[in-house]
Image 1 (tube, rainbow, N blue to C red):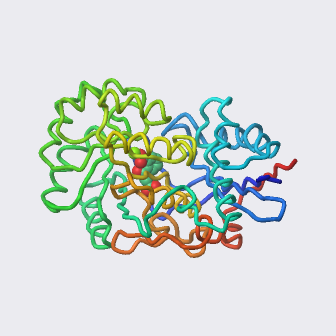
Image 2: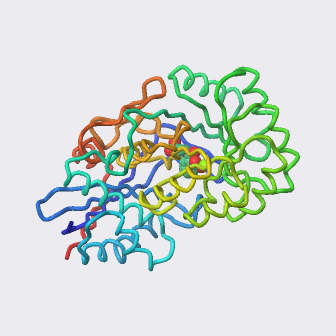
Amino acid sequence: MKIKEFKLHELEMEMKHPFTTSFGTQTKRHITIVEAVNADGLSGFGECVAGEDPLYSEEFMDSAMIAMKKYFAPIIIKNEISHPDEVWDLLVPFKKNNMAKAGIEGAVWDLYAKENDRTLAETVGGRKAEVDVGISLGLEDTDELLLDRIQEKVDEGYKRIKVKIKPGRDVSMIRKVRAVFPDIPLMVDANSAYTLDDTELLKSLDEFNLMMIEQPLAAGDIVDHAKLQKEIKTPVCLDESIDSYQAAKAAIELGSCEIINVKVGRVGGITQSKKIHDLAERHNIPLWCGGMLEAGVGRLHNIAITTLSNFTLPGDTASSSRYWEEDIITPEVVAEQGVVQVSGKPGIGAEVDFNKMKKYLKQTITITE
Ligand code: OSB
Ligand code: MG
């Protein structure tokens, strides 16, 4: 396949509700939609999930834009490729910048699937016709507000509820949640807010029958996570720590986690996600697909990857309406009773609606031969 040009559509989307984690509050989302166009004028779409600021990881939207424009798009245009797996090989001399790489690679995967008239899910090797989803709830100002949000999402049928925690908003808050919702599938995500000095506190979460605790310690603390997992009963799930196949291998070998959250952007794309998937499956480590407050294109990529066999736990790919008044795709992603149907249409399975996208568009940068 030959890519003739890439278009980088920079969007700014207002979120319906602010989303607060231990590292900050977000009220709008800066997103780059990557469009790969072939000689016949057929387009494939990817989404770069880098955040506004380098708070979740070292990447941020402006850095990713430069990396895509200056390095990654030109090198893919220059080379003829026979399969999207080759994108990683072409980009691997450039270190890290995984979300930028994944944005470019995702557009190539969608185009490849469309050229072959197959769904993206089938193309990556997935077999499921539907996927289970949960929802991630940010920190609220009061426990009462959080309880209301949980009730709303339980009523909508989400398969599990994830609650953000941070020091001072942890044990007593979760105790209240469990008092009101004793039986819901519940997990917590700390986004690296703790250290091993907090082991006793983290151990006290064991009494709440949580499905897992996501990323309690810093991203680089793969060794400390192994120590923590030995001390606590609640399964540790790693998010930020798993930024490569090598990191996944280290975490599995050291026993740093019992579960992995795969984010396509964080690991550098679908090819790397598949490699981590197969490794985890061989080691009986279940996976789920995390989210980065994606617009529709990223959501559909997440759904496609979730159709792989070892994604056995509900992911964070909730309905488009979770964050957006109006998403940029038609039809939007809709979860019904916590289940999303996988589209049978080629590629990501929905149209990118340029009329809708126009409302959010800041600029489009075109990279050609
Ligand atoms: O840690 O999983 C995370 C959002 C932005 C950055 C990091 C995380 C999250 C979420 C929300 O938890 C996931 C989503 O709904 O897209
Ligand atoms: Mg997380």
